[in-house]
Image (cartoon, rainbow, N blue to C red; front, side, top):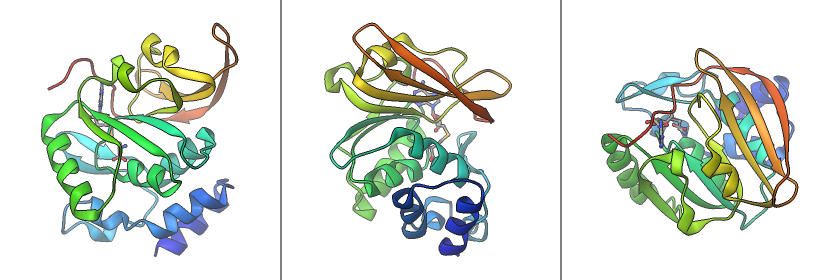
Length: 204
Ligand code: SAH
């Protein structure tokens, strides 16, 4: 089923073979509550509790591809959620720092990483709007919730050459890629419309 899903994503335009390999390898059904395994290998988002969703596999693959990860890149993820996107980043051999603002999900997913032997560098309970200044700068930052605007803190925590992939908008979001060209210059590219749960301020 995973192979088939990777095939569907390739048809939809995902080209990076390492990203497709992650989709083929990672057991997405284990990131859903038991009883919902049947839904795991459809290209769909799915509720994971606390009013949140595991992103659609296509969206995960699309955002990951835009990061152009090299082994040992330092990547910050905002919105740990189920941990599936985190696992994809780890599969690409990134050093992953991930932040979640919902305590219930944070605790559950942190435990799950332990059980599965997934090893992010840090799983943080906090507000992703602020980024993670102590661990900055990053080669890449990925935001997995819809941001009403682009948090300045995240742009400032990119290395020169680093990339921020962020869905921007309220009702629906424009996938936006910022590349830091120099200390002061950022290039911005807009790459289509998606729908995410909202990026909320403060932790809960
Ligand atoms: N990457 C996740 C997607 C989860 S949905 C996955 O693959 O399952 C988005 C997540 O972002 C939710 O868990 C939500 O609680 C979290 N979130 C929303 N606003 C946030 C913020 N300001 N900081 C950190 N996490 C946030």
